[in-house]
Length: 155
Ligand SMILES: [Zn+2]
Image: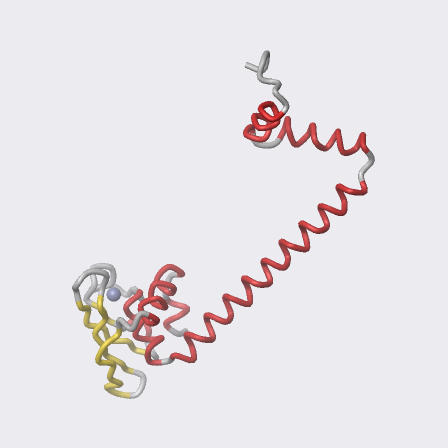
């Protein structure tokens, strides 16, 4: 297991941002698979970070989140991405590809729904609309009432 598998989604992306913002300073590979660096925090603080590629949970950072715990924090991830920029790029591409596929799926679904609605008979469409209005979220009914000026007697 690498650092990526040991961290949280939030720490992964905050670490990625830190890496992109060049918050990692004085990166040194002290021995194979062992890196130390200073990482600038959100304010003026500077954290001392050591990452262990072989044993991610032995990585150290003196930030309040990770100090003395076996947590892989955003500062460690920032150091990791700075040491392995190609990994940062790979993760970024992976997420972007996933996002594009998700967008494509949503778009396809909208298309299908639209086609389905156009093909409906008027009575079917009316029935479907009533169901959406009466069993969907209340704001839909409220909006329908407002737009069709049905306010009187509704309350
Ligand atoms: Zn930290």
